[in-house]
Length: 449
Image (cartoon, rainbow, N blue to C red; front, top):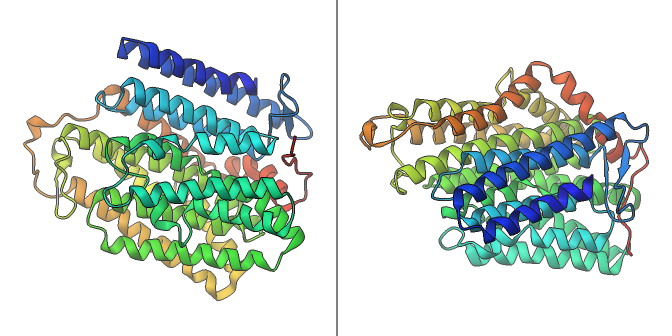
C-alpha cells in the first residue's frame, strides 16, 4: 500500500503533463491526491492497530515502511497538497503546477517511508525541484538554491561515510540547512515568493529537516554525544528569536510570512532536542499546527494576490475584509491557531513546547516564549495589513472566497479546532512517536544497501 501511495501521484503527474485540458488534469490531480490520502489513512490505521507500531510495505519490505513517527506525517502531507490544489487560483493550476505538486507529494512520502539511505537521499533531492526551478524572492534565489543544494550534499556525505563522527556532523548540518536555523535562515525563507508560492510552501511544509532530526539525529546524538543536544537546542532557540526579531523590519507580506514560518520551525527543532516528553510532544503537535496554518494563510494570501494582480501593499492597510470577509475569517482563524488561541491545538502544543524548553534549558528557555509572543504580534500585523482599514480596491472588483476555497480551507482548520477541544486525542496519537524518539521503543533505522 505504501508503494502504491507513492507511485499513484507520479502516474497522475505524467497524465497532467500530457493532458491538453487543464480542467481534466486538475480533476485527475485531485482524485489522485484523495486516493493517496485514503491509502495513507489506511496505513496509519494499520500502524496504530499493530502491536509493534511498524508496517513494512508488502511489495518493497526492504525499502519502504511506516511506523508511529512517519504514518501521521504520511496522512498530513497529502491532505495539505489536496487543500492547496483545491484552493489554488485558476491561473496557478497549469500543467507544470499540478505535475510539480504531485511529484513533491510522491518524493515527500518516499522520504518519510524510506528504509534505505540512498532512496531517502533521492527523494530528499527530488522534493526540492520547485525551489530549484522556481524564481524565488527577488534578491535571494541564488542564496536559497545554494542553501537547499548544500543540504543535499550534506545528507549525501552523511550517508556515504556512515556512522562516523563526520557522518553525524553532516546529518546535523543537513537538518539545520533544511529547517532554517542560523546561518541558513535567509536561504530557507527565500523559498517563498511569487507565482511559485504554493508549491514552494508545500516543500517547506514537508519539514524533512525536522523528520531527519527526529528519525536519526536525536537518537544518534543521545547515544554518542548527548552533551551536544543542549547546544543544538540553544542554536535553535536563538534562531527562532532571531527570525522573530528580523521580521520586525520586514516590509512585504511574503517576507513576513516566511520569517514567521521559519521562526516557528526553529521552535519545533528546539522542542525535538529537549529530550523531554513535554518538549517532543509539543513539537509534534505544533508540527501539525504550523503545517495546516501556514497552508491556509498562504492559500488565502495567494488568492488575494491573484485577484488583485499583485496589487497588495506591504505597509499600510489594504482593507480586503470589506470585499472578502470569508477570506478574512479563514486567515484570522489560522493566525489565531498559530498564535496559540485557547480552543485550538496550537494552545496545547505551545504550552507543552514552552514547558519542555524551560525544563531542558532553565532560564534560557524564556527565549522561546519571547519569540512566540513576537510571532503572535507578526500574525496580527499580517491580518491588519491585509484586511483592516479602508479598501484600496473597490469591493465590487474583488471576489470573496469561492465554495471550493471555503470548503477546503475550513476543513483544514476544523481539524485544529476539533483537536484543540479534545487535545488528549492528539497527545495519545503522537505518544508512540514520542517514545520512539526518546528510545523507549525500538527504532527502525535506514540501512545502506
